[in-house]
Length: 147
Length: 193
Image 1 (tube, each protein chain N blue to C red):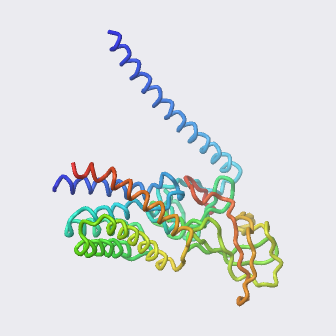
Image 2 (image 1 turned 60 degrees about the horizontal axis):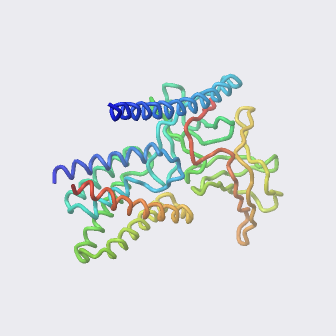
Image 3 (image 1 turned 180 degrees about the vertical axis):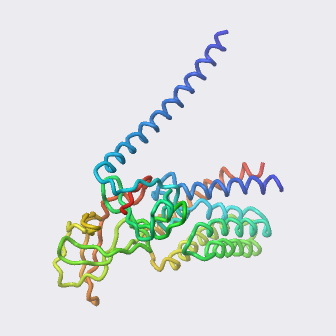
């Protein structure tokens, strides 16, 4: 378990760096750190995943002069949502996929509320890119983390 | 013996490929710096700044630049790209670095002129195009009109009017502007002091 947690910490930190450096500019509008927290919430047991959400949420909030702990709050909320969802619907793949989709839409809407605008096209793009990236993450990252 | 030689050649090939990639990168950087230098020669009051990174969110367009209060950068300083088009403005300045809010950010706002017809408030929308608010319906705004601002006798172009709509229940026009600068990819900026 310790190795898994270490691997996840490194991966989430790299995701944070990629989000910060934006090597693809604003053409890639999804957030790898957010998807990483989704990945952790789906695949790691509750107290640990909550820890990741808390630490990396704070990490992201440190960079923002406008949003006061909003990322920490959103990441924790996502984590609790997944924990509750899987408590009742454990092991069903379709439920997991629906929950991931809902979490991405909720995240986009929460951000829209924060900026007081609803950028429909950006939300659509964010949803599509996030969903695609998440499934790639599930396919490749899961294997490496579980090994 | 032959396989050893092949292995050696493969290694050499890989090494040359990596060197070539590095050369290409340096060439691109060289070209960017030359462009920056030519602008600086023409306008010595401009300050060159490198983008360190961005706020890690898909819903904000904020960049961090490598100049701060120690370099004389203050809140409200305007930033242009290497073609002279407006890119954003400094929203916060720290000792070593500053936060640059880009044109397309939802919190960006700046008074601008449309040709010499009227003034309005420019706002970011996160969609790649910008909005101008508070322009009355009786102003003759047409597609292609230049949107600009005056900064100590220097005219700075923002973009061109892309769409004008009259809204039924509103006193003001709905104006969409296409920015001239590339708001999707920013590596360097020039600050106007």
